[in-house]
Every structure is written in C-alpha cells, then in structure tokens.
Length: 146
Image (cartoon, rainbow, N blue to C red):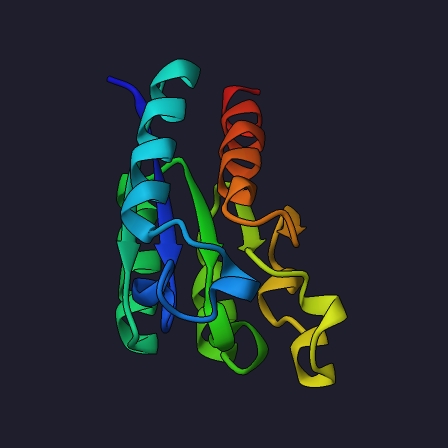
C-alpha cells in the first residue's frame, strides 16, 4: 500500500481561483487536488487534500495524521501567523512537514512575515503559486522514502 500524504489547507483556500486572483491565481483547490493526486501516483504515494476554515478541524486532522499519514503538506492560510495550536499539533507528528504558501508572504504585509508553522516545518515553499504544492509533494516523497 502506498504511503499517504495529508495536504491540509486553512481558511479561505476554498475560495482559491475566485478570491484575489491577482495574488493567488485562477486555479481552484480542486485543480490543486487533481494535480497532487496525479503527481503522487508518479512518486508512488497517495495524497489526501482537505480544507477547513476552522482551526480546530485542522488540529484534529493533524492528530489523525499521526496514525494515518507518512507526511503532511500544510498551507494554513492566515492561521500561519496566529496559531500556536497548529504548531503544537504539528510538534506531535513524527513525519516530515512541508509548509506551503501560494503567495510570497515575505513580500506582503509585515504581519505575514512571521510563521509559527515554520518552527516545525522541514521545508517552506512560498511565492511559487499553486505549483508550490507540487514542489512540496516532490520533496516530501523524497523525505519519506529515506
């Protein structure tokens, strides 16, 4: 059975493709899911993409990943900059974690420059559009095969 990678997405990413396309592009989260599923197959892993606007749901999925997933790719959206709860949950996960941001958070408002998630992440990809998910999947597949 192929190893499973959780791809977790935070608030407002359900509006991807509709919300601020000048920043986030026109591809939808369904497009990202399809691209990741295809690429995961090429790497011999499986992907499971989930999105929630609720911090507690994301924490619950991270807890679930402890027994179900070999790695986590996470785009926590605005929770990146505020959620110690997500950081604490990620610290209970033993596998690799890759943080993804569609926009370059370091070129945006100052409050977006800080990431609690980065304190746990094994890698951070920012500013590469939705292609960042593919980069993250490639890296996490490499890490879990070591």
